[in-house]
Length: 408
Image 1 (cartoon, rainbow, N blue to C red):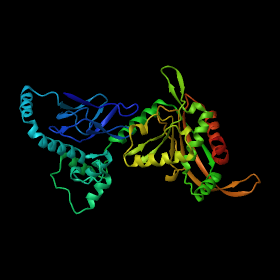
Image 2: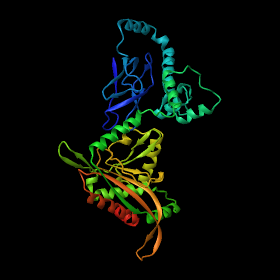
Image 3: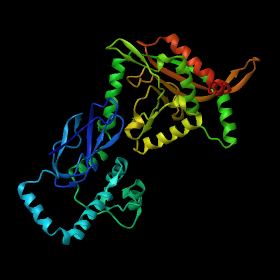
Image 4: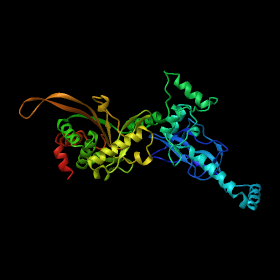
């Protein structure tokens, strides 16, 4: 008998919520077939089958939050036949030659049936939200994987999903949708709350505010754009932050309180907070110190798209050493961000506004100024160090030619 347990599918994961089972008792499954969708504090993930066999029992209900190591369901493996089953198998072997074409046909039918329901958690969610049986959707991908585009085509097409009696789960979802003054506190929202609470009550937060003159950087970006090179402002931020972190490594660190050590990280993995419909997710630009601004721009764009489509893999959200929250485009003018535990600091970039500035000739000119806020762990660093760090960052942004020279 195979036990399917909730295992650690993300860095530091301790628990997860069971969102949806993709199989039911009696179903035949093959190795690596997705069995259940689980919500962690950062993403929705599918747990695969550890082997082939028949689903015997599901022991944890959907909507339940369980600890890592909890058994979710049992699968009777192919090698656990009874004596009667062995005799039946022997009898079948006598006519194996004549039955081979039929067996192949049955096997192919099973594999085809399995392939028809290959889909990401995001795609399955779209189907469930529209009461579509995903098995009714014809995949356009040669691999047999159903995509979100396939579901939307099915939704808009002439063929309609079969009408079925509403399940208790569907009824519960409907009830939630018709109760506008109640929002379920579970899933990613609940996991985010737990992590934020742990961070706030574990780390003594201090927030430092500063301003950065963005005029020259925005001018450079427009010049690059005119030359056919498109690079986002956050890509410049990440590159400048890496340079500043190398000068002030205490902010690219983790406090090991138990062993009384501050661990200075040698890698520069920058987390980029992304606001999605399901909550805040922090995909990571890994090895940012080894990448060009153009490559960082492409990484940020790709990770943002995957985050909003629910397609992030565990590797996309692991091992961040410093986190960035770019809330300026949303209109924010200031905040006291909560550190992404167990990191030492988090920087938030707020709205850039046109303001009057006095230049070196005492002339009043119009410039672009951005506010930033940096929260840091006061056990690890002091306010003066934080000010020096943001000053270093600002000098690179305000003089982008200097930033380019630093990269040579």
